[in-house]
Length: 471
Image (cartoon, rainbow, N blue to C red):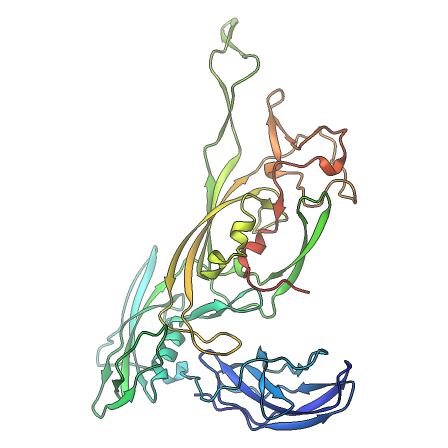
């Protein structure tokens, strides 16, 4: 377990219009699993027109952040959660908020890689099966057990975890890598037997979703954990903290650009595998005058009696995003629903603006085996994940070299959201070239010359739809 922090260091800073008050404060550490009991209480008298400031506790092994609980009386409530170690907290100018009470127990569990001891014999009990098409391996480790939380902590340490970070991205604990083949990562725990005599009867882990467990279980002094490793197609990587803030101009049907901010945690650069290639796509001319075909030497022109077909420079793209919180799909705010049928507003993973058309997704959900404590602390809860196939179409159409440049975006004119290129280019039969296609004639007001497709930064699809946008 993680021990609770020392009493917080308090100070005040000028700001706001709050009355003078004496504040009582405790803090807790937050770990990848659980939250500690509160620190000793600290108090400070803060003058009128000043705000309370709470210094960060010292860094300690296993702590990923800290929570602040404060009040002006005996009752303390949560003011902030998941604050980064090293970052102080300052009271908002509107005063304290009414949050949850401090925890009464320590729910953290701390198991480190150094707590795992490799199972060894005269002959190596591990195994590996490698080829140029991938690889698998198996190893076993001993773990000394001290409480029921050790099992969840060990499984999360080895297999990793994922859940919404609350900042637009995903907070991930990376899976353990194989010690000899570091591109193989822990995939499953096929066996977790307790070994040795002297087991003790202990109360079962806390219930989840109300399903009653047996009242007790036998905890052995140590456990053998069998770990299966496998390679992964995609790149693993650490969380981007804090995420970036980006802006774009949306077309919301008002006839004017609407500036929108969004979080860019660069989730599309990790846990994503891309497959793409040409896809058969022909344009067939079914109206107008028939063409002619020349036959013979000297040739004779005959009327061409079939429909004219022209191949298009298009393709199919599938971005498979692994171990994604299922709420990204099911949320009423889901970006996958909101922006279906749009093209890329700007360059995305090497595809230039307008060349990718977002079509749909296919999600395959599953439940993580270990309940997770939210990044800001609180009760552990199950977190559903999914693997998502993001289906898109690509095109390499280029605008006809003789076409005049479209007017630059301007108030009352063409919108920034309207991309001149890619899927907004259409074939003209007379010259077999691609031209910018929009509603109305070139003499109509520019703000009404709406193209075939509106655009969106595809980076936005890879962010949490339930996180409020940046201020």
